[in-house]
Length: 112
Length: 114
Image (tube, rainbow over the protein chains, first blue to last red):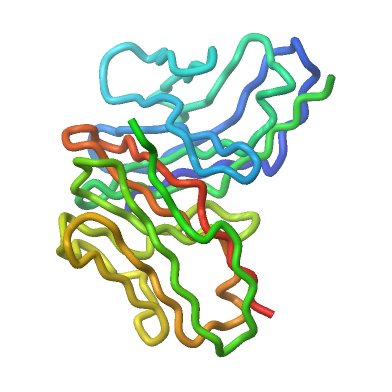
């Protein structure tokens, strides 16, 4: 079964410091991987995706993610965190007929 | 382009009562999903529609949950009777044709069952 795991519950980072949110995957075949963000009291928003090609994927709001096949990871990164980046971040993998399975989510807290 | 619309945003009911949530997807999006998001967990798929047909409802608790999308546009999710464990945010999402995995979510309907 296709699945993703987000090992941390919360990530605290000082404003201006690099931000990393971890995700590992378990999929059969070539992986498609996604990151979504959820701001307080809002729905999820698509950030970026890996389909094939370059292992470094760039997305919205200055985020990027690095696909690492040997470590089965797809970590989300941002070089310099902003207070406004405080949100819930979900890693996701498609399965079946265009369905998405989400990880449990990581709460990111950016400290001013 | 208008986003996915959901209502109501908040609902508080007593257990054993019924509740209905409404969703209007983005125009032209044939695929519609209902997800349940319990506090501290990732969203869990309840049901997927393609136009007005059900593609997957394997995780829908059919003894109490029902959903329909009669004209292939807007959709309604109903819970009857509600249990305490149904307290969650119910998210509706739609997908643009041809874009694998890129879902557009509404702001959700937060249900509290007392």
